[in-house]
Image (cartoon, rainbow, N blue to C red; front, top):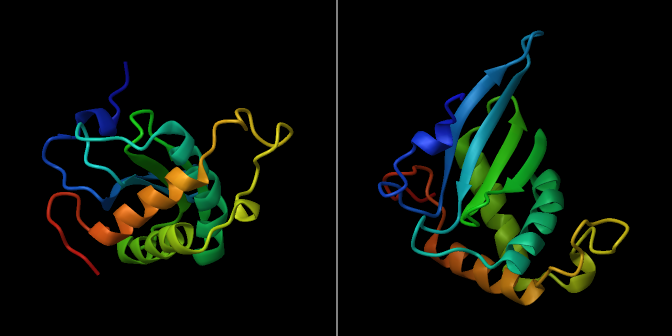
Length: 157
């Protein structure tokens, strides 16, 4: 089986919340795609409940595209401690930290149900599993802690 970088990471050594560049892939025409570990909760010490994570995912999918160019996808980890953020090029971690923090602040302080995209049976494969209340609570906790620019040392903006 192929080695997956995320499974070689020492999850006991990281200090969430943080944004970490996992790697950069180069396509056959020279295009670069960066994969980031957006870890919001300390691994093996907690997890965002599914409904809240699902709502954060839907909101971040739009909010990040409004704040930074080059977002391809943001998808939750199965462990529910954060997201993979896939981007065109090689964006700076500090730019992503700012955009994610600003997005989470919006979720925590301003988001209304009408702001959450893709929450009908037509638009979502599990539309009943959302919680704006949970998303707000978790977003506020993460913003309060601050998102580090380093996975192993708390380096805040």
